[in-house]
Length: 177
Image (cartoon, rainbow, N blue to C red; front, side):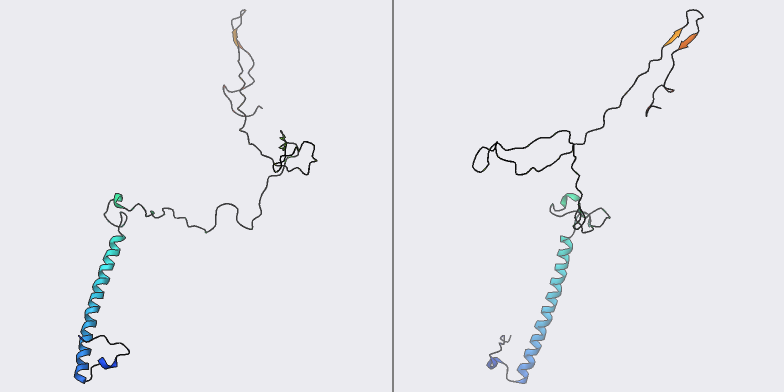
């Protein structure tokens, strides 16, 4: 095999035409063997990539052999819109209005200065900031009224007699009418 030719070593180049032909034939043979080797390596890489991508959804492997770090594909057909959840930037915000007559007022006042510890009981008020918490209460339980309609037998004629019923059905839901 001929030595590798660098750009500065013109003295190592073959001088005759026969030597040049032999060099070209040898380089063609080396090139062909390298092409074969590259094709074999490409085939091997493709096979290894195919094996690496095989899991229980793409082969007959059991799900227990799936790697734990790989996320399963999304099952939803919905597509992400790209927006974050909640109020979008630029949209006007909504704030609950303060109530003028709250049920309870708690005054949060400091008795002494948090910086120097001086008594603040006689100091003038510089400002009051109002914050309100609205607790939503569950609806009250239903009001149940039981009507007991008394039935009696007349002692004179033995005819049955019932008291007047304000409700037509034995059990009823809904507002009074």
